[in-house]
Figure 1 (cartoon, rainbow, N blue to C red):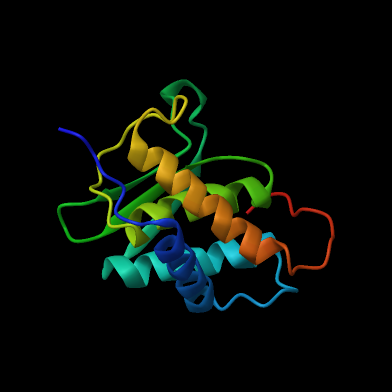
Figure 2 (cartoon, rainbow, N blue to C red; figure 1 turned 45 degrees about the vertical axis):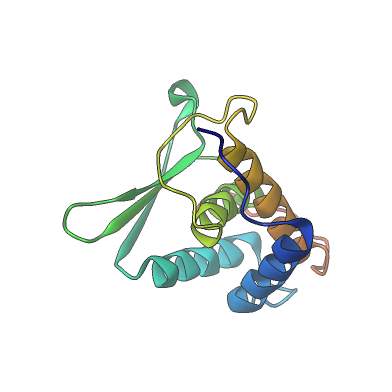
Length: 144
């Protein structure tokens, strides 16, 4: 079965703009604070309690995934990067899957062979660019 990307460029740009507006992250906010806000939006979009965990994932072949738990909670697992910029990118990738209504089946991001992974990464890149291009340049925060 062929997977068709549901969002054309114009529609995707409008969706990026809508998600950026929903995030409502001021330009001067730190990457850590922006990541916290992304978690709030993920929680609101999923409609249930959310737990976020940062853990080493090197050998797993993943950098992040979102799981629906049997008790109605959600768990977002992200690679434990020392840089908040990278953690923010991973969280935005997970938010992209939710905003794009992708079916949630964990898969490794090896070359983005899966069109949903590629689309989520492009969408997350667009979100990150929109959030960071208006931000004053400063050092990246380390740690949680």
